[in-house]
Length: 385
Image (cartoon, rainbow, N blue to C red; front, top):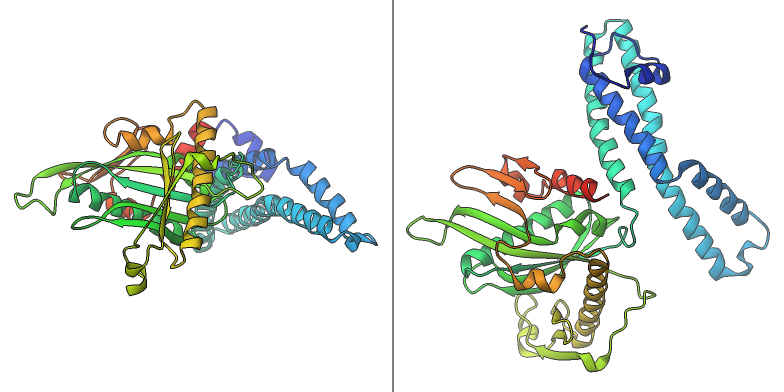
């Protein structure tokens, strides 16, 4: 097989893994990526110190009288489990990585082409897994592990923009479903003819906020409008705002005098009951202009709780953005046009999705709109970390 040139760490890899010149160029590249990812992940999670802490907490858990203070005991177990969850994935990856490298070396020493192809395929998939795991390990900023709210607002343009807002909502639905996350619509305002004027989605899953936090911004669509009888090309905009669902123990100061609370009749699914009672709740924070609303429940009291939780999350997200000198959520919603654009989706006359921040491009726009957005998310996260 052809020797590989240009791999600066090849000698290091050969020393660590016992590689020989028989491995294919692609296998060696994959080994290099995985080995680097494992090393980086261990650094991010402070691997060796974390193992020591797990051992110390385990000793406490196994000590006599541990349950004398039940509340403290629960906290210690939760802390131990969180630490264990941070090291388990990289430990598992490393064990499987060593095994597959050994199997490839064995198959190549025996000229077993069929097994080489199978093991190389596993190594290729493991490379993607290692890259994703490395990104996840980067997501250790405050609230990266939290659930999140994804709020989408249609820009100017009537039905065309409203349809685009619904397409974006479906994209995030499909992305979340593929990850096994739980999804709930907390508020939805239907479009006049099609689509939605606005929609808020609560996505619950490990690090959902961390993965989606850089989706906040303006998303632009270019296509032949299905609502234009002359089949002209239209440009539409929609704003996406992502905020973490924060715990109740996080202090967010809200003055009741700063709030305007309105009730209205719910729309959409829910039967006749939601159309006959003012169960939906809209809360406006007057100083910032931030609005949160919920119509997911038949109970006005429950909708008020949800809307208040969303408002706390939005105000906290605004505080984080101000600390980062980033664009405020209120500004993004006020200018749903060319400003603050983060991604462009072109469906006609060609297909191309391009992220304006990272330069990542994908030609299969329909796959992206079907939830295949990991490459964009990973690039945005890597860029800011």
